[in-house]
Image (cartoon, rainbow, N blue to C red; front, top):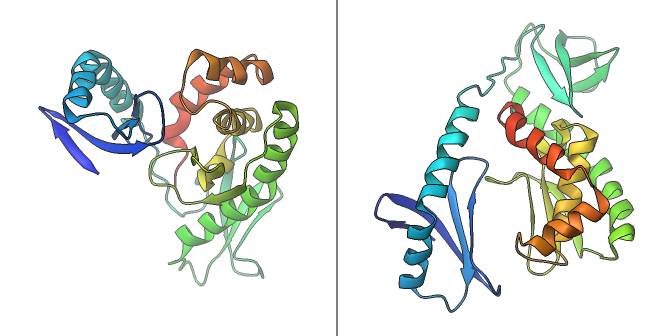
Length: 230
């Protein structure tokens, strides 16, 4: 539900949680997650108390996204996969729509025409992510003593990943663009939510147990996330 308090527009989500949290999402939206019984007055009081934090983080988000990369489907353009940039090569003699071959992303074209390039790349990242991410989840869940109900790679509106109250994990296909170390951080982050729903000190302690340098990986995603796009 979209709401507004003075000049702050936000999306309100109520669920069975004990504390309230405010997030600046990947697309710059403000999300407010609150317990089901929190009143409107209490929510507005929370927003007012966090006003400076919200302004500061929105300004930071705008600075980082000012350098957002726009990619064209032309020979030589760079596209990310697992943290590396591969140049694009348009080819006509290829059975698969898109292949990573000899250090290039080889995209099938018809006399230079590639009207479905966006969907072809998205399918590539979904397929690669669907093969790699569940394996990383399985690896880390054994270390953390948790087990999600399901793992999906899909299109998410404004998050890299999410963990539902029922224990279902969802990962954005764009996660396949990140380095393996950063991808592992995202996986561990969501698995930790099976133990602690909120970003409390106890939550970050669970992440730290598995990835002691998680802050560096988190920072990489914060700084470079704008470039993980088509």
